[in-house]
Amino acid sequence: MHNRNFSRTASPKPAPRWMLALGTPLVALSLLAAALPISPASAITLRFPRSQNPYRVCAKELIEAGVGAEAAAAACADALHPRDISRCALQINRKTNISGLEALSSCREVRRPDELTTCVVNINSKTKTQPAAALLVLDGCRRSLLPELFAECVVGLSGRLDFPTDKLVATCLDPKGTVSQLDGRPAPTPPVELIPPPAPPN
Image (cartoon, rainbow, N blue to C red; front, side, top):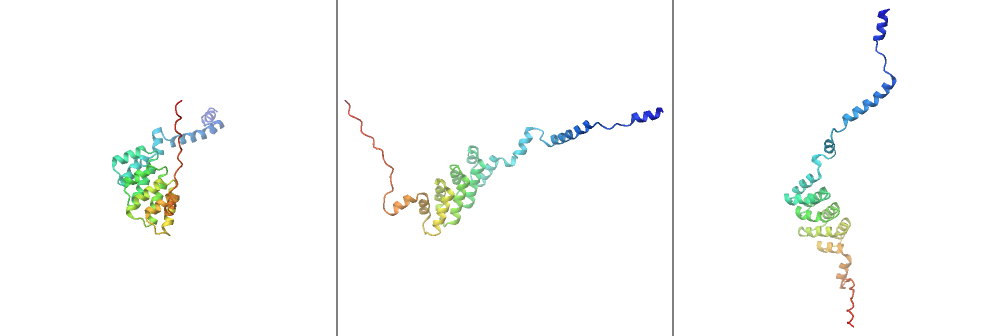
């Protein structure tokens, strides 16, 4: 009789239902905590890998474009979006005969460097642009308010008209001024406000 009671008290009792219900969320939370970064520094490392640091990539691409170290450092540090200007300068340098430093100067002056790149590369690749006129094309794309549309104008006209590059650029930048020069009429000048002479003293 004594042994029977001892065996009953020694056998493990099943866990209450509330413990089983609570155990599953605790296990899930512990697994989630193990998967999360341990510190804020590790979170920053995961979100922004060192190899993808925009300033690092900017300096690397500008050096590849032939820009000096000091000029590259200053340009990247001064840019709000450093990858944009370095990509602009590198692509223009690779696909035209424009130096990286000359391309960088224009890339820093425009609001959308990617459109400047498209404009310069398209005109140089789709027209018979003389090597000496490459900088003229770069300046035209920089001055245009709509660089991609400006490139379409230059490329389209060059396919039908045997115009030199400088004339194509001037025409697409200022069509009205070009027409005035062709028909002999002077370009319109803005009105001048006439200031009346001061009244004589009494």
